[in-house]
Image 1 (cartoon, one colour):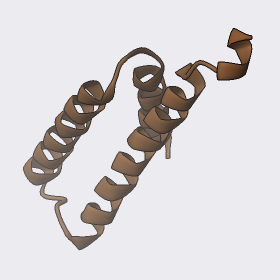
Image 2: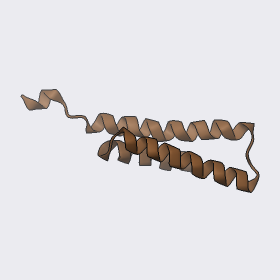
Image 3: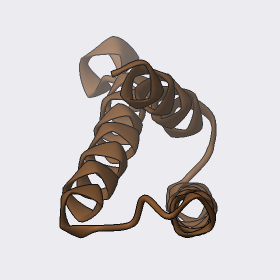
Length: 78
């Protein structure tokens, strides 16, 4: 849960500051890092795939929220 919360905050910061190439790079980096650690430690299995999907959902939902919050409101231009 702590890792998912950190990934959510990371996605939020990426969404507030950068665009979609940054979230794609972050998703790829997280995937490579996690799979490498899980394979080295011998923990890779069927359940780990669901954990990985959850981590990616946390990262990308934070990105979507950050991008939404960073979008200017057209009503403010009046």
